[in-house]
Length: 200
Figure 1 (cartoon, rainbow, N blue to C red):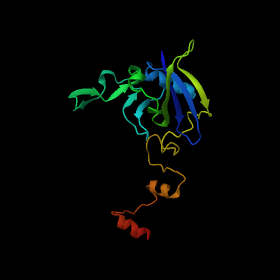
Figure 2 (figure 1 turned 30 degrees about the vertical axis):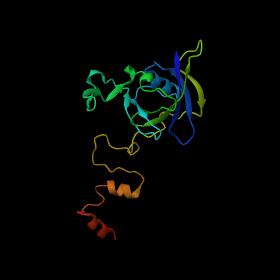
Figure 3 (figure 1 turned 135 degrees about the horizontal axis):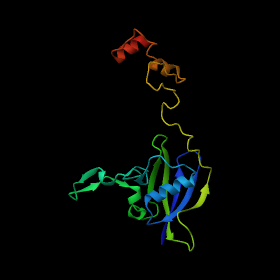
């Protein structure tokens, strides 16, 4: 049995990474689960892998979502056939998408908090006797708290659930004034020139 050894680096200022070894014929779903275990993240959020390159651009997607037979199809004009535009983790083997050391993948977990991991295939080797895979072969740095990222831009604004007419406070006076509908009653600007005239 052959093994992929991946270095998985979480996108943070500090250097925090895990080396994960996993069978080449494993599904992406197994790598997804191994990454969550390696960083002590709980399951339950959406996730996707994106094939990447040396400049870490996002390419073809392998998603946790069960796209099944309802998968969106796109027309491959060169081959004149219809091919799936998105692959599913539970159906896609690692070895069908990765084959060379230095191959790169971006893994995104929890699309509200947007945890991003940079994955590089560092080695392809034979499995060690009596070793269970997948396994974590190296731990470097303390894993971040899964909930340490804000959910979204307005996550701490305490917005009313019914979207009513309360004033939202951000702590930024200029932004608060902009969001405050009652603060500028009677003023209206029909162009940027009108706004400039009023300000200056």
